[in-house]
Image (cartoon, rainbow, N blue to C red):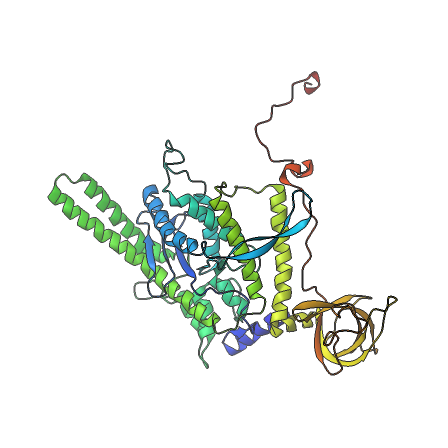
Length: 528
């Protein structure tokens, strides 16, 4: 956390209102996101109790599992969830545009550009909190290996046809959410805390109601008091006025309302199954229907406040202009979505339970590279974020006081630029610094400090000046210009090439096993 964020938290504590830590929005927001508010059963990980899902603010679809221990009811819930999510995902799969991608020519081994299809847009799922993202990943892992009746007619509990497909998509969204800067699957609490700082801890910020209480607190009111009410205020029946942002439930709700309602539902099912004549069966059916409606009303009462809070968070985020590099990161999300669409269409198997060594190393390298790229792009897009990097000595801004034209041995221009700054950059001998020039990074080399105080820095510009003997117009800062240089690179370099999975060295598990290997023959040396 930067010094700017620490300062913003202190100001929020003093003023009682959330303070902005960004001047632009650093994540892409779809024009039509799919909001998912899940609810799980206490004490049983991955057992869904219900959910609100939809793209319309005023018309969410309520999905409920009346008895979470019933496998058939749980599969029915997953089927209805697939009916809501898959059409939304498929709606982005058909609209494509032509794009170029670099691929390796199998004959020459050189990188060539080929024209491929790229989805014009991609779906976006928004859940209330970080725990919702983990629930999506857990659902995907538990669903993608399910066997349907068509795949395995002898399966003891075949899954509905769309359940494994939904599991593959949820797994992809969950994996993509681990890539810094990705926007396919987002948690509203993470979105808000990226752009506002509150006077509470990061753990307390995961309560969406409390977080919005800080952001929406009117002038003259205390965000801390409003957050306390959102976290702990209860009605006359002892129920929270602002339920937690899912997927967990409140113990008072479980014990006083939900458990008795499920017991009544179970008794009604048993009575209906034991009914002997049509008249009695009609009465038992009405009793069962009433029990179902009661559970539906309870689940909706816990999820609807969170549903409304997610949309209020979207309203707050839409007041910020989008950052300049957000579109580039969304394009990478579109590539990811298109690639997974193609894998599903080609009939490839679902994602494995465990990655092999090469795949795991590639994922780790990708996440590290994207994290460094995200940090750089956010600083370039947002002066408030750049201020934090300047305080850390990773950038400096100042006025150009002198420009002296110089040349290297090959008669190429290497002008010397003197920048007077109030920042304190940490520059080693011949250290490289960078500035954004027409969206491209221009490199300079640290030469010396002009005075003992270090308030003036002399730099030698190295590139982006054209091919002529004289620098192109605007490629070299002029006297009086105000410029910002960074010690971190704007574009991240790729790491070393990894071997193919079939060539994995023995130190990392060797090639993937294709079958059971025969054990070594027993010899006399194996016996003591």
